[in-house]
Structures are given as structure tokens and as C-alpha cells.
Length: 606
Image (cartoon, rainbow, N blue to C red; front, side, top):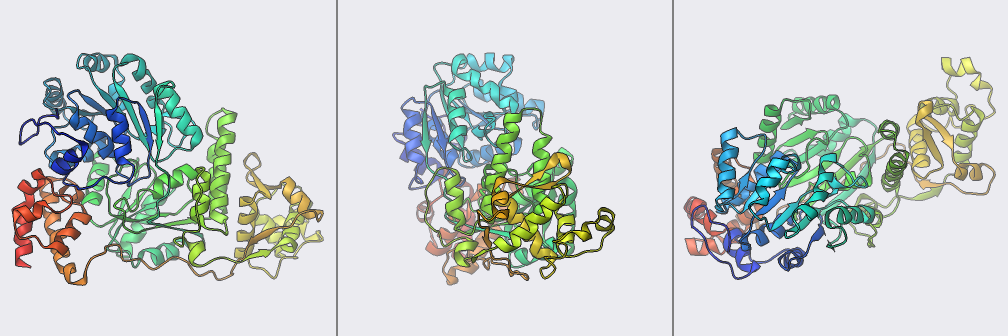
């Protein structure tokens, strides 16, 4: 028995496919969805590791609608709860959410809907759920399923660990008759095992769909002049939605202000803004084609499917964090671009952040190794997708959809230059950062060099034929390939590793990506992201405009009305009757009743 429909009353669905068709308006499940649904419906606990955009929410919403018992969805963010509940209500599903963003009376009414059985889906934060009062109240309702979204937050091995998630491990003993389904897009094998042990205690399964997102173009570029590089990346994407990630609140405000000055529809978002400002700005981004300039405070659980690019202005904290953040692009399966700008200062800052993160040396060592993996990815000369998947223990083939595949870099022997750099580091006592070492190599006459008499070194000026930018890139590759390490305790001093020692005595070579002094970007021109007949494009634009009117009127994200893929089908199929419109993928009965006549009117007039 499914929960009461907000407009049509109760009914029984005979299969997951009938729920998919009659509630959500879709004809077929995406790869991997039916497997997870079947496991849940068979009464098994399951951790589903699915790439962003694979449709995780359908995997627990379908079983919830087929069950006579309550389903609790545990979500870390108010915005995510609001977006998912709005999308369910748009499809006629009675759903409740209780969180701090609601007035007390709204929360009281939501609880009445749940306790009366009117709503069989309840969204809660882990903090709200794991109170004795709420646990006791829910226990009296005999819940059948607990869904834990963003499940990597429960593991100290994973990215975005949240201590309040750890208490969710109590659910298996407190509610032994309920199933637990956990979902994440970001978990390596160690994190998967940790999540499963905490939530299931050995009584559960892992459904691993994989990590590949073939629709994402992967690109990395050394940071030289961030303003010109960013504008070059965005200038042909000005009418698309995207996210630009910055490391600090100040840089977020600065980058957003600069983009607005340049005429872009840019929005700044970080935790320093008041809650009402963040809500307003997120709502604007969800409804418009805009560029969200943000810290990582923005993004987890964002359901906007038509984000066409994600650009990092700084190095993320780890491969997991990078994968999670680029995963916010192209959730609709259409092509999307990712771009990472980074420099040596990013590496130093990330090392500093890790060293300042508590006293747990095992944790600190683990985070340094994760950063090492991201650096190796950033400087790889091979296919980036192969490198990314290898981190998650998956094999891949050269993809043809990354910068290194479309414009392969040349790998050259840099042993001679490496011996100059490593020799200067050794001669100066391994006590200085990159800037001073490069000045010594290039024969600079700075006060620091004169004071320490480094102009008397045999290798002083030995690298003068190379530019400062060249040596910065060289040092970055030497760090990424573990010939050099950065000593945070000694203010970022570069130190030789055993690999560098072997190079200095002629027992190892140093190979590097060729450094082009005036590097040209290997970014692709923006690809056509909507596959649609040219004749249908004017109608598609009119349908999008009508969708935006409904979204603004109802204060919901545009995709809640209809996703782009559904509008594309409408524009190409041009249905003329309600029956024909009902056959369009993504048009369920509730949306047909709410929006059908208005959209048909536009199509009839086209």
C-alpha cells in the first residue's frame, strides 16, 4: 500500500515499474536503480555507492511508496530536504519534513501527517532524529525503512565526516525490524567497509555501481592569472548554470564581485552570509541560469540537474572531495565541463590545513596521502579518467573526454634541470620555499640572497635561461611526483625525498610533462549540451520560459516543474492532446493535471 496521495487518495502499486510510470512519469529505470530497489524490497540492508546523477532518490522513494510502513529519510541539509519534498509533492506524493528552517506550526502539522499515516515519507536531519524524544516517538510508529543520504558523512575515513552522523550506528539495535538503506557517491573501499560496519554490523550488502561519469570533461590547468583564466573559461558559458569553487569566504566574495563587474550573472555563497541570505541566493540559483561562486559550504545534496560546469579556483582537499564536487555537474546525463586551476600555494595551504586538523597523527597521515593522490592526478600526463577511476579501484580505458586525451602532453627527460633544482635545495640546507629557491636558480639579487650569501653558490644562476613561471611549474611537478616534500612546520620549506637523492647521484631520472612557457588552454569549447532538432529550439525556449514562470510562482526549483529532458521531448514530439502529453517521459498524472493545459497551449500555438 502506498501513502495517501495529496490529490488522489490511496492506491496499490503492483510493481516498481508501475510506481515509476504512474507517480514519476518515467518509462524505464536508470542502470543500477532496479537492483538497489529489489534488495531493499527483499528486506536486506544495503549500502548503494552510485555516481552522482544515477538517480539515488528513486531507489528509496519507490520502495517507500510500495510499503505500508513509515520511511525515514535522514539528510544532512535543510535545502536538500526542501528540494526533494517539493519534487515529491509535485508528483502528488504526501511527504513530510521536520527541520529548523520551518516554523513550529509547520513542523507540528508535518508530524500529524506522519503519525496519522497520511504521509509515509518523513525527512529529518541526523541531529533532529537522534534525540531520545524523537526516537521514542518514531518507535511507536513502527518504521519499516531508514534511508541515510550522503552516507560517507558517517565515516572518519571518508570526505565530509560529520560527528553527528556517528550516532546513526545505533539505529540497527534500536529498530531491529527496520531495514537500513544508505547512499553515497563518494566512498573508496576503506570508507565503504567502515560505513557498512557501522550501519549494518555485518548484516548488510554493498551495491557498487561504479564511479565513472563519462559525460564530464576533465581538465586541469596551472594557475597563472586567475582573472583572465576564469573569464576565458566562462565567456562562452555565460548563459549556462555552473559552480565556481573558492577556498575562502573572502576569495568567494572577490571572485563573485569581479564576475558581476564583467557582466556575468554571478552569486556569492558561503557560511558567513546570514541564513536568510543563503536561502535566497540558493533559491535564485536553482531557478535561474546563474554562476554560483561558493566555498564548499555549498553543494552537498544540490539536486539542480542542469549544472553545465564546475570550476575549481583552488586545489580541493582530496580526490574524494574533488570527485564529489565535480559530480554536481551534468546530473541530467548531458555533457558538462570540469576545470581545476591550481598552483604551488594551494599545495602549501592544503598541507597546512591538514597539519592543523587536530592531534590524530593517523588521520593527518591519511589526509596527506589523499592530497598526494590528487596532486598526482593533477599532474598526470595520461588519461585523467583512468587516473581518477584507479583511485577508486576501478579500471578504465583512455576516454577521449579529458584534456590529456584531446591534447596529449609530451613527456620529456628533465633530469638535468632537476639536478640544478635539487642541488640548490641541498646547498641551502633544505630550509627555503619555492620562491627563494627559484630566485637563486635564476640569479636574482634579492636582499635575502645577499644576506645569506647564496649568490656565492656554484649553482647560482644556473637556471637563468628559464622563466619564473617555468620553474614554478617544474617545482609543482616535482612535488606532485614525490621528489620534493613541503615541510609545513618549517614554513613551507622544500625538502628532498629519497627519489630526489637518487636523482642527484645519477641513480634515477626525472621525467615530466613538457612545460610550455606560454601555455595555451586545452579546454574544449563549450559543447552543445542539449541534443535537439534545430527546428524545435524556439519551442524549447518558450517551454523553458513557461517553466520558469511556474517555478517562480510556486517558489520551487525549475526542474521540479519539469527537467530539461522532459521539455526536450515535448519540443520534439509536439503533443497536441492530454493523452499524447501523458506519454512524454517525465510527465506523471499529477504534473499532467497541474501543468498540462498550459504547456499544451504553448505547443499548439508554436
